[in-house]
Amino acid sequence: MNKELLFAQTLEKVRALAKEQGNCVSEEQVQEAFSALELNNEQLQMVYDYLVKHKVGIGTPVNPDDYLSTEERDYLQDYLNELAELPTYSDGQIEAFSIAAMAGEADAQQRLLEVYLKDVVDVAKLYAGQGVFLEDLIGEGNVALTIGVSMVGSLEKPSEVGGMLMQMVMNAMEDCIQEYNDTKSQDEKVADKVNQVALKAKELAQSLHRKVTVQELHEETGMSEKRILDAIRMSGFRMEDIELGETKDGEDNV
Image (cartoon, rainbow, N blue to C red; front, side):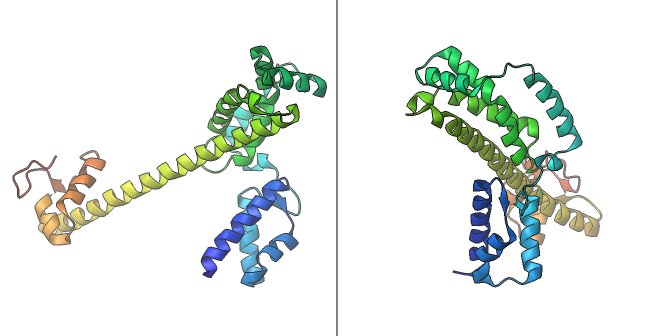
């Protein structure tokens, strides 16, 4: 196995371990995990910095609030004020709600929803800072929670309810972040394609002292006409250095 792959796999194992330990690992655990790679002190420090950036405390848990923007803090305070108006329940009541919800009682399921709304906030704070706004994370978590309370009938014990619901909440937030990252990556690829064509068109237009055609750009750069036309469309037809006319086949560029 090459070192890059081993490093990436080890890093994910350390993050998984941290999640089991309340998002915290010790320096000794990190050093032991990476022992096979024989990292020097500078490289280990880079690992520590990466972990802290991703809300993993080294020795002591990080404070998730430190990763929130001012806008997110303002939203969070308003939302928590709303949640503060909800009733609070004892452990015995929560267990009773869980049992009744497992039996399919709609009112008990609603009570469970109220019980775990604050926990959704706590989970969302752990996932904040990864590109998705806190409000959206909470929204995704609340949807998962709403679905989850209607599915607790599949469990055998009321003590399993909380774990199941929070796992569904975490899965929903992770899916939300993954979707955001996939979309961002796709957008970056589109932007890169558009910028490459626009740059080549500008360079050619400057040398010719006029707008260029798709055919000329194709012949000069070797880029296919399809790639150029796709870039023009993705730009919203706003490439000022390209003359929109006909291709060599007589087909309209747009």
